[in-house]
Amino acid sequence: MIKINMGCGWQNFGSDWVHIDGGDYEHLDYQDITRLEQFKDNSVDLIYASHVIEYFDREQVTDVLKEWQRVLKPNGVLRIAVPNFETMVSLYLSKKCKLSQILGPLYGKME
Image (cartoon, rainbow, N blue to C red; front, side):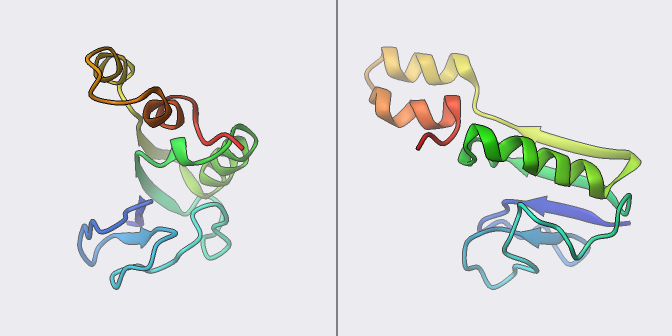
């Protein structure tokens, strides 16, 4: 079974996971989460991507999702976690965050 922790950062899920992140962490297996040439079509059982999508601009996210779809098995699982809109708005309205701090997570990377 191939399980990928996509955009894992410092989180190490263990040796039965493939860890991919653009950062520089000791436990990483690969560093490019946009191109997965090392995986064959329909070869991955699970991709877990927690708070990764918001780091891509709108043009990139389509290509990234297509690449993830390419490597996932037909009955594979893609689990995506994204920022909670209500929480972000609440943080802004309570003045705990500036608008500039929540725009990226809400709308994706903007050039």
